[in-house]
Image (spheres, rainbow, N blue to C red):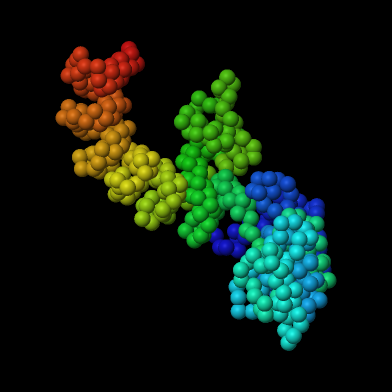
Length: 474
């Protein structure tokens, strides 16, 4: 999605949040501004006024303001042509917030602040060929700067006014206009609104959001937006996996179906995602309005888009710490891979799993992704168990237990019978118990006999696991 499309989306959301009240047309700048409502202020600690429309070729457009920007400061530069003008500018700048910026020739801007209204800044000037500092009063803020000297030439005074709302904006702009001050603005991006917009793209379940979110993740510098984009892509992938379920609603052109005729796991996922409501007593699954009902029309297109390959390539790249330093984004991309289960992701996942400098939670996610890929990942997991550190061993063993099958079972049993690391033994017991077939039970029983009379953690765990398995098989 292009930057312009994102800006349009954000602007629409801003206008929806603002409503139509508290609108002010600024005749001086030829633009309309609106008050932020209390919801935006409270949710994102945001203050100011939003530019809602700009007259073409007017002062606002020439000042490079754009619709949707938040004006957080109005800044006036007072022209200093004589001592009287200096005194007026100081008085006006200090009466608002007790501070001002003083610009002296050949020096960096100096911020001068007083403790309370009415305190003296401590400067007197005189008119020579220019406006020069004549006197610096001891013990005043001007003297305390240690920078200002008698004879310094005053170039300008800058009054920065923080805009809390529409009244502040009106007062500041009108006062600056009366004093012929040159206006500039400090604008703030509505990052909270942008995050809400990016999150909304994920919640819509619309195929058009995929490329837009990929673009934000790859090309936006703001970390908060990139993280929101990664989470939204993760959600879209999760939604796309529910396509078989929603196609049943679509094919029958109904918003309610008999619950026990549908896949129970997909029903549970759809309910968690807020797409439908399951009534066990009535044995019904009903699509939630409006999102669930809309999604049955969108699910097939989203499923095709998500599975066309671009997301797999992106996720495989962004799970690498050397490429993506933000762990939340890496985690989201690992979740994407776990849902899509591409065989091409085995090597990148193993690389993450084996990375001893990676955080354990991320390494665990990589192991989960390999277990979701299934039998194609068995050899890579066995190699990781045999060659990597103890953390990778534990994760690989658990993943192999999730995959199951004869090959993994035999490997895990052999590993349990030959390893001496207590922590690894516990992981192997749990992995073998997940498989739970007769050879697995026999292997666990042999280990119980091996640790007969031992009060170690492995013996206690074996007793608990074996008891649980034998009870469930009866």
